Amino acid sequence: MDFKDQVIIVTGASSGIGLASARLFGSLGAKVAVAARRLEKLRELAPSIAPEDRVLCVQCDVSREEDCKALVERTVEAFGGIDILVNNAGLSMRAMFKDLDLGVIHSLMDVNFWGTVNCTKYALPHLLERKGQVAGVISIAGYSALPARTGYSSSKYAIRGFLDTLRIEHLKDGLNVLVFAPGYTASNVRNAALTADGSAQGETPLDEGKLMSAEQCAQHLAKALAKRKSEVILTGLGKATVLAHRLFPRLTDRLTYKFIAREANSPFK
Image (tube, rainbow, N blue to C red; front, top):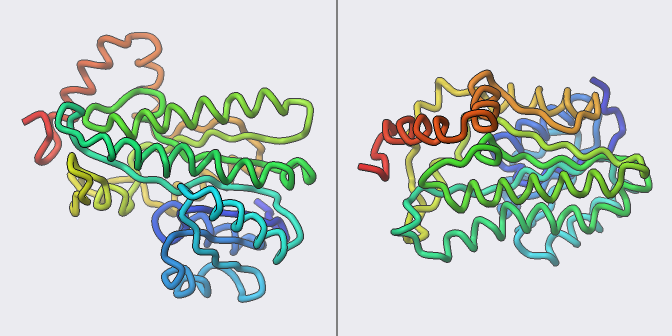
């Protein structure tokens, strides 16, 4: 993989898949613009991503259109253009819809879906100029729904629909659009997941040590971008789930219910 001198924006880059990806791109010679809400955290991490003149830290709440516009403008000003946009910033949730404050779903759509739309809108002219790439980090939950994650699954389905449409619109323009769907990956996303009232869950129901690492996930993402792939579904379980959902949807519903019911402190109990 060679990303030498390519300009790459990574949102949600202060932890998890975003941070691991930014570090990998930096190690492979890219100029990396990292975006997150916590600017001081980004500045602390910057030396581990790339040399000072090859990393740009931008405070950005992707749910705010003006922040996304500023992210793109600052990247172009610093590095002269954009080759790849990685829409990674995301928020999760865990609660039954019947118990849910609707503000939780609004928050997830604002960050996950609208964050992807906002950043892509302003980056698109620059990506088209360089025949670049836009990637969206979704989830297996964007193919086969997860109960107690109505807002999360809905937002990931929406991102997939948006990116698939964008790909068709630009088939003749040289733009590559990647839908990247990891399975369960070790990260802070479950700790920060919102509960029914909008407060953070604070702990994960999974054994994070048994999940794919963020660094492994980043390797898969980089390889997909290097090959200009349009879709990646990770893990054997993830691929089996997507296929089963297409072929045996009712059976998959029942199996998914049983899987989530076994989680620690499952909302079903």
